[in-house]
Image (cartoon, rainbow, N blue to C red):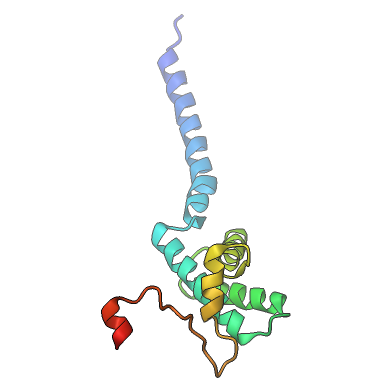
Length: 140
């Protein structure tokens, strides 16, 4: 009496293939769909930067939580409207990074932004940039 091992191995491979396909469908595909694409990330980063600047002008200096909520809600509503997966941790980190880059006093780039930031809704200040003028511009 001989047993055909090929049929048993084929059946085991079929069962393992079905289990593997189920795992891919259940876990891998949703995980991949939840990740930002490069274009979405660029769009969201620009939206966050604009939101941080707008929040700085809309709210007084002592309303940090309101500013953060404003930017977070803006990004969340944009992501919902455009069917983009919303990753709250990534957005929170990006908001903090943009805020640090723009308004942290220890950051040299922040002093440039602070010079041109809107202090009041009716006044806009600009830095005196005389060193960057060419001789032709200085005479006009």
